Image (cartoon, rainbow, N blue to C red):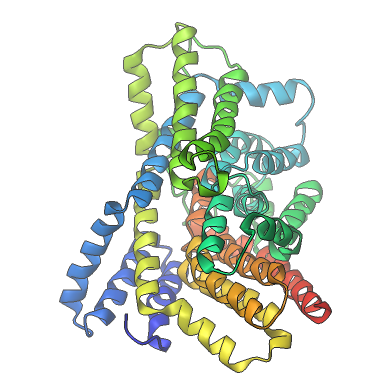
Length: 471
C-alpha cells in the first residue's frame, strides 16, 4: 500500500462530486474506482482501467461479497413473490380497514414502525418498509423523498443498536481482533446507549413521522407531492416499479399473512443462522451467510404458501422471482461498484490518512468527539459504514486503552461516525437502497435527507463532547 496522503482522498471525493453534480450514480462510482487504480498504477489511465475492471471481478471472488450480491437478488425475488401473493396489499388493506392508517401521519408511522421492527439487516429493512408504505404515501399524496428518509433513518441506525443481527456479529469480530478486549459483547452493549448519532437519527425520524416536520428541500418535496406531482421535473426513480412489484395474480385474494409469515420466518432465521454458523456462539456467526439464509428461508415460505393455496404454479413463481431479481440488478451493480471503490480507498489508505491527521494533532481531552467526526468524514467519503468500522474501531479502541480511558465511549463514537456516512453519503449502499425501495430519485433523496442527518450529527457532537468532559 502506498504512503497515505491527500491524494488518497481523490477517488471517493470524485465519486461524491460526480454523483451530486451529474446524478449518474453508476458512472460516478465507476469513475472513482478508475481514478483510484489509476493512482495505484502510477497515473497510467489504461493500466488503471484494466486494474479497475479486475477489481470488480475480485469483488465477486470474495465469498462474503458474493453472498451480499446474491442476497440483493433474492430479496427482490422475495418482495415480488410476496406482492404476487397479495401480501403487501393484504397488509395495507388490513391496517386501513382497522383504521390504523387513515391519513399521512399514519402512513409515516407505519413506515417508521416497520423500519424499527425489522432489524435483521439494513437493506432488508428499507426494502420491506418501502414496499409496505409506498402505496400509502402515494395514496395520501406524501412525497417519496419523505418515505426514503424515514426508512433510511430506521435501517442502519436501528441495526447498530441491536447486537443480535449481522451488524452486531461484525462489530464483535472487529473487537475480538483488536486485542485487549476481554468481553467484546459486554463492551458493545455498554456502547449502545452512547451511540448518540444512531439514537438521535432514530428519535428524529420518529418525531418527523409523528409531526410531518419538513424543512428545506424536504418541505418543497412535500408541497410538490401534495399538489399531485410525484417527482420533480427531470427526476426519475432508480428502479422499475413494474419489475420490482408486479401486479398480484387475480385468483389470489390479498391476505396479510402472505407477507407476515415469510417475514416472520426471515426474522426468526437470522439469530438461528448466526448460532449455526458460529457453532453455537452468536458472536462467531457469519453475518453475510446468516442474512442470505434468512432471506432464502423467507422466499421458501412464500413459495410454500403460494403452492398450498393452489392459485399459482411453479413456472409462474419462477418467472415472478426472476422478474423481481431483475428489478434489483441496478442495485447489485451499484453495490459491486461501491465495494470496489471502498476497496481501492482502503488500499490507498484514505481512512488511515484522515485518522492519522486527527490523532497526531489533537489533545486527548477532545479526541472523543473527533473520533466521531473523523469516522463520519471517512464513511461519507467511502460510502461504507462497515469499512469505516474496520478502520476506526482498531484505532479508537486501542487508543483509548493506551490512554487509560473507558473503551465504550470511543467504540460508540467510531460506530456512530460510520453510521453517519451510511445514512448521508450519496455513494452509500443503504442510501442507494432507500432510494430504490421508495422508488424515488436518488439525488433528491440525498438532498432532502441531508439537513436531518446534519442535525442528528450536531446532537452527536455535543453528546460526545459532554461525555469526553465527564470521563
